[in-house]
Amino acid sequence: MELIDYVRAGYPAVVFMTPEEDRAVAECRRIASKNKLDFATWSLTEGFCRLNNGNSNRSQNPITDPVQALERGLELSNNKEGGIFCLLDFHPFIKTPNVWRKAKDIFKQAKNMGITYVFISVKFEIPPELEREVILSSLQLPTRQEIQKLAEALAFQQDVSFSSEEEKNNAIEAALGLTINEAENAFAVSIAKEGKFNAKLIGQVKEQIICNGGLLEFKSSNETLESIGGLKNFTTWAMSRLSAYSIEAQEYGLPYPRGVMLIGIPGCGKSLTAKALANMWQKPLLKLDVGKLFGSLVGDTEANTRRALETAEAMAPAILWIDEIEKGLSGVQASGKTDSGVTSRMFGTILTWLQEKKAPVFVMATANNISQLPPEFLRKGRFDEIFFVDLPDMEERKAIFEIQLKKYKRNSENFEIQSLAEGTENYTGAEIEECVVSAMFDAWNDGKREINTEDIIKSINTIKPMAEGMMKEQVEALRKYSETACIRRANGNTVSTETAGRSHRVIRCE
Image (cartoon, rainbow, N blue to C red; front, side, top):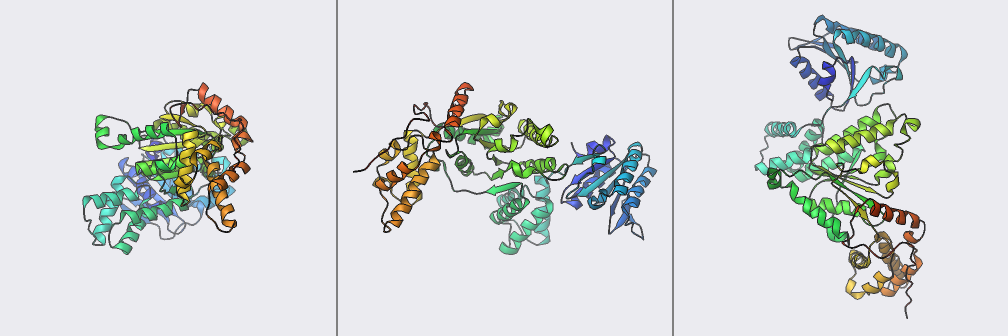
């Protein structure tokens, strides 16, 4: 819910955790004006400042005592309609016993007077004694219209003109997902360096800002579908969904793709596929590490989750990549006993967002162990499709060898690809790459000579695939689950006859 809903519901205290102080105060002021409520602010340096008839009335002697500041908020009851009282950076004081005790007493009175205390801070730890009295809220990221208004104002101020409507749209698109201050800084860097609004430069600044935030990582990749070496069913499906982003498809009424989940064996290309898909669709790729959402303060985890999802929506159309999602959500079932329900609440927020999101954010989740995921996460409606990524079959292994040899500057025609593919049954794509790399090291250390087929075969014979060792049972369980649950195979149109546990072939050269 938004702040206006809490104000109208008569909540006595709301916490706005946001770095955009000015924008948060402006929003509170707008709500107060629209609903004919009194409005005032307090900060340690400026003291109590009340808005009267559109003018700020600041006291001569600023109040620096936090208890007195709380008390002054009750003066807004002079208006029978109540008021909104914004307290800036109050978080260092709220943990003091006399302050939270006074706040608890005052909130009881404020509830009857129609006064809402809004605490605006980047961080705010709510004392346990106030948890039932205070509600957390968040400031939505700027809309496209707000970013456009900022760009036009800055262009006028700096006497910089847009060469075309396309240049303007590209610049605005590049700044989506940033706060007003961050977008202004990105625009300023572009103007200072290029003398114009350069979308590519603005995007580079945005990438740095998002990475510094820590919740999302901005990923760039040159990977293509040709880099995968298989997964034909998935790539065909992905190509069919790309057209949904066209104007014609939207006019037709086609919905945006919601997302896809890839489950399967580690090292078989799930992460590589996410990068290739973003490159194919020409959409920004945001990586979400669920573990980074957890915070040490009460309410931090929920706020981090909302902020990460809001950032992804603001950057739409985009791809949100959640890698190894089962690790972040594995403790949902016991969350009430282990972390006071934090993981469960975070999971609930993500579930609701997956179901109800309207923005064109395509979620690509990958998982290695399906048994650790809550069942409700896999039901239809969360994702468009769920694919099972199996070990590469013969043809896929041949393609992977060709890709890896090309990657390391070798011509695949100089190698016996058929023999290499036959000798790597039950190997993952990552293990096949390691065979090539290991062989190159051996050839380099043997007089810096050129690598050949025999070198790679030697490496194959020294590497035991995980599917025949530590992960044998997991591979079999994943295959059985995918068949029982009728999960689509990503690898091809036919089911592989090769099974995990079958001894891989040992090839000896003459």
